[in-house]
Length: 307
Image (cartoon, rainbow, N blue to C red; front, side, top):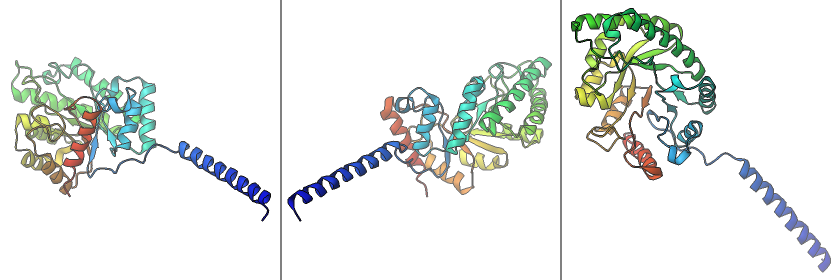
C-alpha cells in the first residue's frame, strides 16, 4: 500500500470513529438518568419535602427522585389543598412512573376541634362536603385511601352517645366515598388526649359498626406504640379492618432504627401476612441535609432486609 493511500484510509477511519463516538455520546446524553434502584419488599411511601435537599423544592422532581431510589408510592396529607393544575400534574406523573398515590387527609378544617362527636348537623355538613371534594380529587391522582380524623371529644356528652354520633357521620361519608371508589382510613392518634379516636380496638369497633368497605383503619405504628403498645398482637386482632399502615419510630418520630421499635420484625410480620398496601413514611428525618436523606434511605433498606 502506498503511503498516501494509507494516510487517507487512516484519516477516514479516524473521522468515522469520531463520528460514531460522537453519535454514541449523543445517544448517551439523551438517556434518562441512572437506572432506578431496586424496589423494596414492602411499598413504602415518602411525602413532600422528605428529599428536598437531594431533589430540590419542586414536588414533581421529588417524586422522580423517590422513584429512582426504589419507592413506588407517595402520600401527601395536604393534597386536597393543592390547586387543581398541580393535582393533575402529580396524577399524570404517578401514572407515567407506575407509582401509587397513598393517603391524603379529608380535612374541612374541623379535624382538630370538637366536631363529629357532637352530632350537630353543621359539622356533619362540612364533613360530607369535604368527602365529595375528596372523591373529585381522588379521580385526578388515582387515590384509593384518604385519612379521616373524627375530631375531639365532646366532654358534655356520654362516650356512648359520642361514639354513636361518629358512627352515624361515618356511615353518611362512606356512602359518598363508596360511589367514588375511595376508602376513608380512620386514624387513632396520640397527639393530644382531647382526640376522640385513640386506640386500635376502638377504631375496629367503629369500623365494624359503620360496616362499609369505604371505612377502615389507618394503623400508624408510631401513634399506636405511644397509646397502647403490643404492636404485633394488636395488628393481628384488628387485621380484618386495617387497610393502611404508617411508620415512625418512637421516641422522636423519625425513620426506623432511630428509636425503640423493632421495625424489621414488624415489616417481616406484615409481609408474612401478605400485606400489599401502602406504608406511609409519616415521620421526619433524623439528620439534616443530603446526608440525612441518604441515611433515611439506608435505614429503610436495612429494615426491609428481612427475607
